[in-house]
Length: 119
Image 1 (cartoon, rainbow, N blue to C red):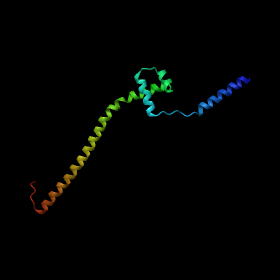
Image 2 (cartoon, rainbow, N blue to C red; image 1 turned 180 degrees about the vertical axis):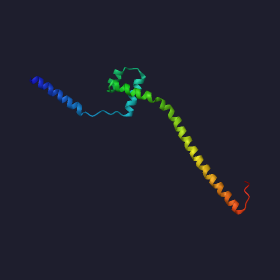
Image 3 (cartoon, one colour; image 1 turned 120 degrees about the horizontal axis):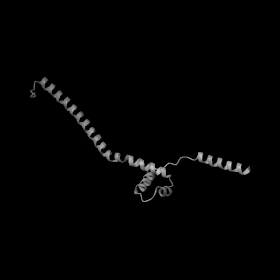
Image 4 (cartoon, one colour; image 1 turned 120 degrees about the vertical axis):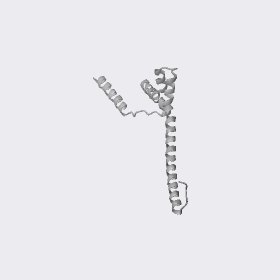
């Protein structure tokens, strides 16, 4: 009976230790290094998991995330260019509006002064 209670207390202690451990957090640089190694495909997932001390499923998930986000890498430049173009268009419309106000003011003043502006 003592052996059984000793095993139970050992299991309870391990369970408590597992429950109190904090989740490991990995930096973006570390994840990138792991994914680059996985994409090289010169080592198996098990070898990479052992080398980087990460579960193979985690490596697979990071690799999937990278591959899913690849199209965004190439479309970002286009999005930035579109944003820049829109900002330029907005500035130009604002400038056109200001110039129209100036022209209308000048026409009004020239009529008041009796100057022919060639309308």
